[in-house]
Amino acid sequence: MIYLDNAATTMFKPECVLKANDYATRNLSANAGRGSHSASVKAASIIYQARKAVRGYIGCDEVIFTSNCTDALNTAIFGTARRGHVVTTVYEHNSVLRPLQELKNRGVISFTAVEPDKHGVIDPRDVERALRPDTYLIAVNHVSNVTGTVAPVAQIGAAARRHGVLYLVDGAQSVGYMDVDMREIGCDYLCFSPHKGLHGTQGIGCLCVKGGAPLRPFKFGGTGTASNTTEQPTDIPEGFECGTISVAGAFSLIAAINYRKNHAHDVRALAALGEMLRSGLSKIAGVRLYGKYNVMPNVACFNLDSVNAAIVGDILNEQYDTAVRCGLHCAPLCHRYLGTLSTGAVRASLSYHNTAQEVEFFLKAITEIAK
Image (cartoon, rainbow, N blue to C red):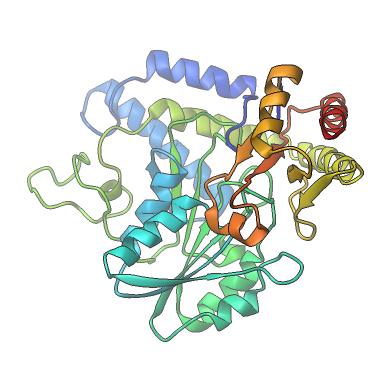
């Protein structure tokens, strides 16, 4: 199979990640921080080392481990919620939009979704203009999972600081593919999951928190701390990590971060491959390519004028053994903006394992389908 659905989850996993996952699954199955025996202490040590690795890689002060990026985003959104107003964008994934909609339905908040400018890019001035006296949070994805458009997160961060507004960045599509540093962005919270750009395993997510940023527990249960009370502890990270943390996921995360640090050159090769993909698609008659400026080159979102997006995906799967993503990509406001809410779109997303030969084969397949 030619796998071009890496924006959902990467298929290729480095050998070191696979070995770490296998070792931890076989040998580190105890609950971290839930006992004083040696196995539990060893598991807790792995969790600590994973936090340290994430802090060094992302430039944050605290790391809360969750089950995935959606869980991390929900923890940040509900953990900061108060009566007032939130500014977000039409590019957001439903892991941001649905929590905001739920808070709106409860009568807690209102929110404004900023549209891109004429170039398809979020203008930080538009975000700043959308702020109101009762705005307490800005929530922006670093990279659109639909078009690959990169948001000016540092400029938005500067606006958030000027107005004393909390700032949440969804790094699901950027971490591992770009240099992401919370200190440079100026955000209070950043969420990601290692199974995408870091080529880690599924089953663990990260909520990275700036020191002093407010947060209330979103879930409740056993934390291994303050077990003498039925009140949920509020200290970070323990008060936010109810239940069993994936030790195998944490151990694999350490390996994934170390691998990415040692293979920085892959980013340039991937960018060249992505340019080949987007350039090739733009030359095929009948292809409508979405996103032009400030776009991550490894994501190409398009439609064929003559063929429904779902049919394109089925043909690629059944006749060309090629995997892409078709549909609405869990981002309804983005598709409404693009005019594809009724049709969806085809997304081909590359990662470090893809080759020029695979891109050539894919372009040939799209050319044949278009005819």
